[in-house]
Each structure stands twice: as structure tokens, then as C-alpha cells.
Image 1 (tube, rainbow, N blue to C red):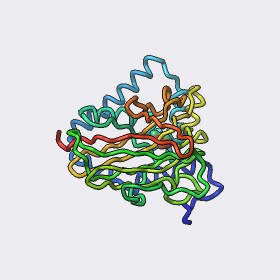
Image 2 (image 1 turned 90 degrees about the vertical axis):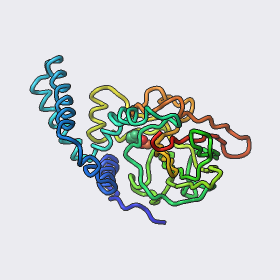
Image 3 (image 1 turned 135 degrees about the vertical axis):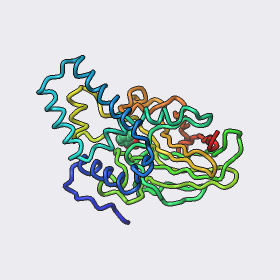
Image 4 (image 1 turned 60 degrees about the vertical axis):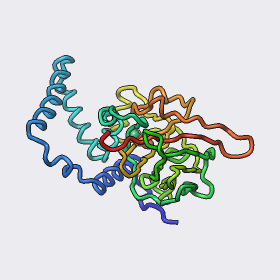
Length: 288
Ligand code: MBD
Ligand code: FE
């Protein structure tokens, strides 16, 4: 089995933070997509963000000691590689809200820092790559991809999630490279059936700069248990979402503010076998 090579003595934050930063740089060319942005828009956005900071300093009479602590902390976020974590936990949900508020189809949610493209394609029916002794409740999930008018779509469900200890493959050491990451391609009927395990609630790394903020502010580091998906079909908008489990104590106070009622699953425990769950995706046609 291929395991992802991370020094065994690295701390979890150094692992997942540095690896998330590396992954972000390797997949995207973020500046290319905005290269034609007029300077007026850059000026407006940068100025208003700075004005919001200035207003907070005046309102709360922020001291030099506090300013210097902020400076040291911001430097540490970068040194720990935690900018992807910080931004995805505390900022991305509002970007997602604005980007998708026109949709008639499925509600989405944030991508977070741990997506990796090109996971193994398992066809319409399959079991997520997992270790023979993978812990967690088995889950068999049936669903269909359709368009907003109800037409079934030949598309893909890319699924990734943490294991029972809250670790994501490729962002923690000792896990097989594609553990709990898979792509399910549907035929013309849009149907898929995925067998996986129910992940555990997830605590964001607490040993880096983000954890320091959480402790200093008296917050908690928890996200509810969740499955991440990207759902695609030709001629349709990409849906990035997360699915949650009823009764998780952190559905109400997700640190990443990424839970929506439409994204709650309803798994049904079975007397002699895995729990079953039905959840289907409705994609918006491009340009609608
Ligand atoms: C995660 O698993 C996650 O989904 C988000 C949004 C932030 C940190 C870890
Ligand atoms: Fe996650």
C-alpha cells in the first residue's frame, strides 16, 4: 500500500497546515482567474477591508501590546501553513453564500482545505478505498444526480472525508494515499450507490496559530461529522457541498459555520448490515 510520506515527528498542525498550503499552490492558479480585475475593484475591496479594521481599532481602543500580539500571530499563521485553514474556517462560508444564492438546485457548502482532485474512479456503484480494518459505522448511500427539471444526469460525485480519528488522507501521516477518497461516475440514469463509513466529529488542529486563537478567545475547535462532495455534470454548475448527520452536537455550533438544514442526511440503522441513507443531488444548468 502507498502511504503518504510525512515525517513521523511532525506535529499535526505542521502536517495538515503545511500540506494544505502545498496542495493549494499545486492545484490552482488563483491570480490567473482575476488577472483582468479592474484596479477600481481592487482599490474598493482592499480599502473597505482596511477601513473595517481601522473602525474596530477605534471602537475598542486597541493598544500597542494588542497590535504587536496580532502582528506576531499573523506571522505565525503563515509559518504554520495555516492560512488555508484560517480562511476556510472563518471566511469561506460567506463567499460560498454569495456565489450560490441564485441556485434553484442543491444547497452547497464550503470546500475546506482538504480536497484533492483525481481520486480513483469507482463507477456508479462502489466502496470507498479504505483499510481492511477501517473503523466506523458502515453506510450504504443511494442517490441520483438530476438537473433542476428532473432529468437524470450522467455525472460524477467526488467524495472525501475524515476517518474515525478525524484524519484526512494526504494531510496526516500513515494513511494510504487515497483512503476515504473516491469518484463515483453515473450513467444516463444518474444513479449511484456508495459504500463508506460514517466519519467522526472533527476537531481542527489545535497545536498551531488557529488553535492559539481558539484557546485565547474561549471558542471550541469542533466541526460536526461531515462528508465532503463535489458533484459535476456537463452543462451544469459545479456543486461543492458537505453532508451532515442528525444529532451531532456540533451541527448547531460548527466552527466553520458550514451546516445548512438541507444538508442533513437521515441514515437508517439496519438490524443486520450497514446503515442505509438516501440523498440525491440537483444541479443547476449553467447560465440559468
Ligand atoms: C475540515 O475538515 C473542514 O471541512 C474545514 C472546512 C476546515 C477544516 C477542516
Ligand atoms: Fe472536512
